[in-house]
Length: 228
Length: 207
Image (cartoon, rainbow over all chains, first blue to last red; front, top):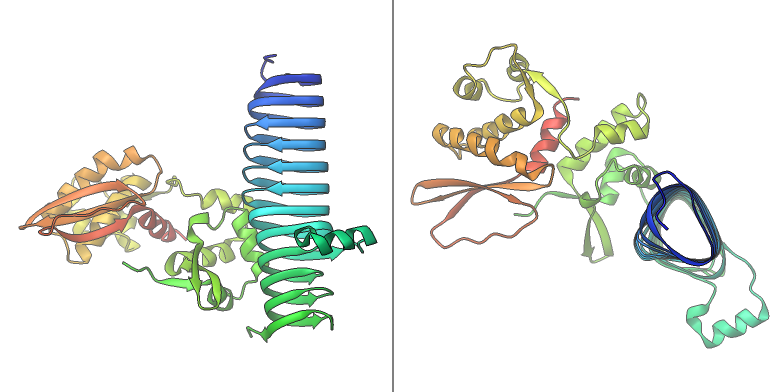
């Protein structure tokens, strides 16, 4: 299965390939890549596993996708379930479904619809998240951070009643940014210039510089205007 | 040896920057990861920075960000030894290394000789210790030799210089940082200097 450098890697069906440098990588079915992989264009459908790190210009992953190492991709589109054991780096990253990153994330433009979990710091330029499951991060920092929740159906409500950890909420230690707009978020600290705390939030401390507004249903421990 | 730290909030207030800018610069590797020091305080977890390093770095970023893109800036500020050079005569003129040091250790070099950054760094470190009055000229010569011989072996990795004295006999050691080091009771640690910090400080003289 060894390909010459800059050649393409194509897997159809069930197979294993070695890492290395490729131009295009296309995996349909159940594919495993052993080792680090560098390519221009990465496209996978089905169940894919990389036992190493992935560096690509564009990445399009559908289905189940696991990376044991780090991921860096300029543009990524994920539909389905993705897991990264290391860190994630990219210019634009778009997810429909579920993403889990154990390390830190650095993304210029992050758009997600579904659920996400980041073990370390989620550092974003702009973040636009429509929660449909549980969101979790150690810290979130960036310029514009927006989290809204899709109204959950009766089944989901029932489920979250029995299993609270599946509730459609964002759990995070601290959020720091310029423009912050939150819904259904549990955070210890939120610091920003313009902060809007929406429905269903429980925030320990809010620090803002210019603007602050809160939904009457939000629970806020303490709020303070700082700076100037 | 507790370093002088500045909290994130103080930093933002003092420099008039926003959280977004700080995070963007971190994403672009303009501010190194290991300057973000996490500490728990009575208000919870807070992030601190080494005060002198981060203030100088942010001034530099603010000065240059109008002329250069953030990516170009990142190249300029990378932790490796930069390829800056300087003429011997300029060293004294710009007060980077005192003239006494140059007279003593570089008297045979011509005034117009151009030094590479690593050579400058050695002079700078020697000068620093001499100015602090912790080291004699003879010891300075030995330090200079030790640096020339051993510092390149670290190849860009962070390292510390340790200067010890026991019963009047001095010795120098370079060790990779961070590391812990313990001595027997008669040994006095005269100075422990982070070479990485010296590189930062010296780089700062260019702007």
